[in-house]
Image (tube, rainbow, N blue to C red; front, side, top):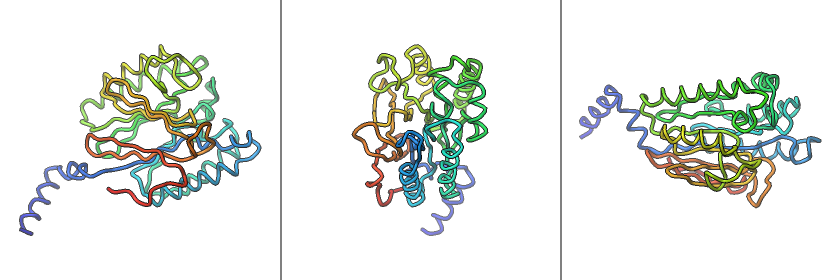
Length: 282
């Protein structure tokens, strides 16, 4: 029996099936949002944000997720040197084996950013839209300010949309089990056709992007911005809005979301910072 098992293992490795075997196990990642250094005190200081974010990073180091994604509003005032430095200092505490993916928010680039604002974000944090792969999963990071308020950066918004269409088209031939979208603004909070407001994407743009996502088999979109949790479902799609690591604006305490993926199943739960699980079953 031992000999047969060894032959099976060799066959899996040689045939490229080792990844498929691994994918039968659960993997999990962490979504944090809106650490927003400076919000608690209207930019006078950021002691509370530091306490919260340091705890969140310690918990991530203990849980050892596949990766951590922070869905925007890394700071409260774009270009604030001290706020940016504190965010970077704390993210540097994340275990080097755990990838960290930043997503730009409106407080990171401005509510109606200029090309100079976008350039400043890139200098501080890197690309504002990009993709990454983890095993058979594709993550797509978008700058949702280009969807919400692109009036001063129409060319950049156009380039992101063209890039997104190309990435999703290329993904069709790569047999990803899941393609997840990460952005700051929720497309919608309660239903796909809800009226425009500060916390969602304008309906005309929302409709165009939803059509694109559905056409390309996107079933899960993760956002922040709302400083509360919200879960909305459309036909074959979940819009998941996650509460803040930083300052809450509703009944949900500061915390983060853990997303578990097992083959076709995706489950997720938001945890306050004082109720993080002791371990995760892989």
